[in-house]
Length: 247
Image (cartoon, rainbow, N blue to C red; front, side, top):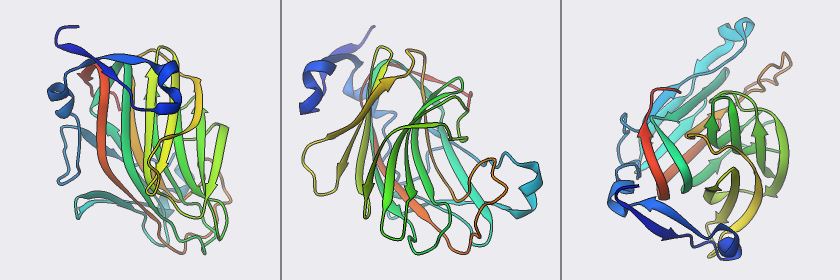
């Protein structure tokens, strides 16, 4: 590709397996990086998904705001609430992307609290989900799904528990394999969460939060609020990036 360079990943434990990615230049990639100092409508499209007609009277869109240089998504108290941001761009070929995430869940409240960072392609998702597990734990799950952007459910293939999470997650695709990594704020090196089959097709990025189970008629009372903070979305390497309106 014209203007591409060969970029090395810095994931030590996986460097031999991942190798290098033929990538756009740093200047070209920088156009799609986001420090969330403002909301960039050229990069992200907001959407709100409920998927249950009989629950519309209980639904309220979650707040999506820029606060202190971070993207903050917060559910509404007393309502089924969610918000999703889908990218206005698609990643073509191999790529290496990352984002900072800070989970602000009220673990004392027994309600669904679920934030995600997802790669999607025509109904297929490879997703990292953070959700409330108990009064003391947040669980990070890796899921492979057969559903659309904003509708995150499916088979959990790997999970890890934390008392809290403030750090970064990273996705690296080579061919039809995608590997997710995480790094807590005190960590220096990336840790591998899971490597799985995905797709070699053009992939979009999705971020979001919800406080209910999709398709469930027995959602617990939504008596509190939960929020997630995203920051420093960065494309470390990508063969090609194209604009889209497919979300």
